[in-house]
Image (cartoon, rainbow, N blue to C red; front, side, top):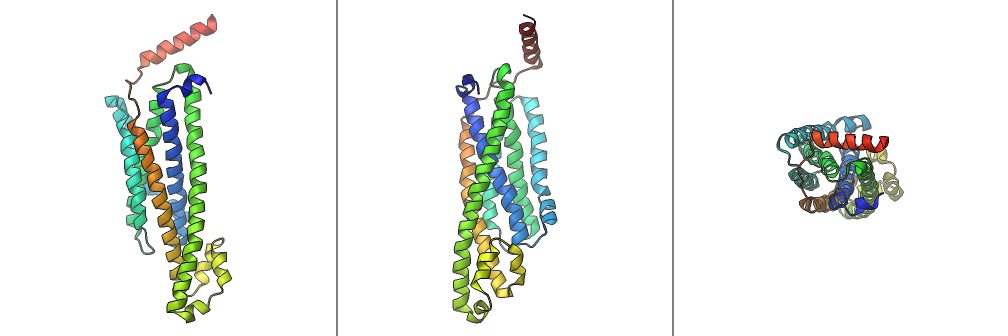
Length: 267
């Protein structure tokens, strides 16, 4: 990367924002369908289709923010609003339970999607508006790289937290079930509980009371994941506050840059 990019204030902030948004985005996109499949019992296809509200939130706010930025020329407010809405949406997912209705899940998904739509493309606009024309391609691809990097670390972190907490809650819930209902607990081989973490289809083969204990363990594990993801995304809110807003470049600016490039090539 050109050294001039690292000295660019906006490049540093948008790279950090891209990393944070990538982590939050994939945290929601991976964990939400996993919750739907394991806890709600949807098939993989149904869980994917039920993510449509999330995508509607992304698309609608991306279009809206793009039109408003074109009209008014201000872009800093949108990643600030986006990261705030996204944080609230992820925090509300802490309310997800075994019997949470789909319409409620849809509202939380729309909020997360709306936050992503307001933030994801807007930080690219902020970045492209702050770097020199010759560095624009490198800067844009670098932002995509940091967002992808964030998604990798986010998915790994949240997955590790889910696995760790699931082992804990499965053990504690099964111990509690054994104390309250020894007959139901004795009908289950403890090795099955360990196998459930790798093959959730086994949940359907368990007695009803044991199924409830296992699903409750999954729900509480997802709660911890969302509680960890929320402050990560909230960090993006504070980063967005420090973005410097500069006047948007005009068509004349781009035309002048093209002419300069043509003149350098001919020279």
